[in-house]
Length: 361
Image (cartoon, rainbow, N blue to C red; front, side, top):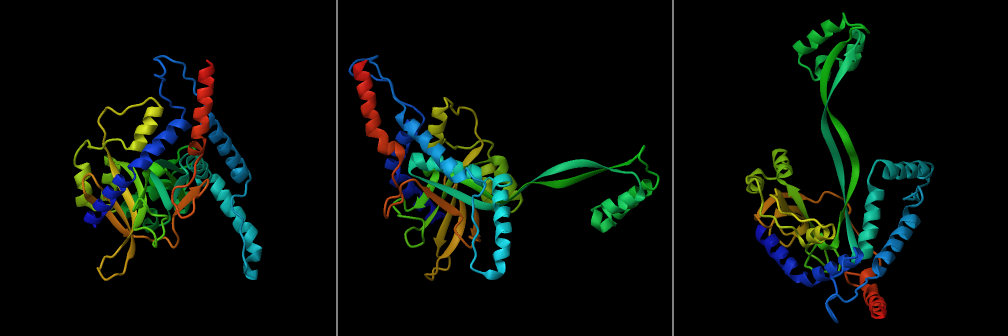
């Protein structure tokens, strides 16, 4: 598995070098980054008209108003007469959760923006349960309140001795002098489907020339992402990563990670640089059809891999019944993964307008 992933990812990085240059150009135009003019003489006038950025803002605004401006993101339909009466309730439920509890609206907005700029954007949706540890104090004013809150020792999570001590104290408690019982619990921060945006610069398609992410046309697909040492160790302790493989990464306090092309673009546009110690590692999460038994039968697996350390952190079956990677286009090309985008369509026009303005000056 390691040999296959290493070979596939090396080929992917090599085969898309031209695309990364294009993405750099499109990103610069969208962020209004242009080089100072040196011709026909040093210090010559070079006023850049942000036409590409203006068009992108207009498209983003129209898409958000048209597609996300109403309360209804989804419409439910059924051909089963027995469930027709429940359709409005189901529709209201999912639209409410998407608008209030889940990050669906936020993700769609980011996907529109990225697809307008890069021609294609990918959203990954996973089922997520995010919790954190909380500590609190419960005030008990009588023994009945104690029983209602803690029940018997088995239900309460307390040992019998501790439960008995608190129950005895609760019999003498009152509103003026309540019994204070410290408790700790897991607080649910997020529960349900959670989306994350994968920009084209970080989306992995194996091979890079594949037309789409179907099994017919590609070996696998996924994303490049970063993860801190502490998070890697936490996942290893929880059994989500193989401990011996994860140790190759978190055993050192700093990593050899260098910012990816996408990170470099983003930092440059904000006037930032990364000079201090860094404990982040570049990882790949790849959905791959793999012949485990060497019998011609491919299985859909999900790999988490560090190419730098050659560490296979996790292998699991793809558990979703449908594909959880969703592709957004602004203008798709037939039988091609990369489509048309606004910066590429406007580049010559923008150059022409800039030239006319600067010649007049």
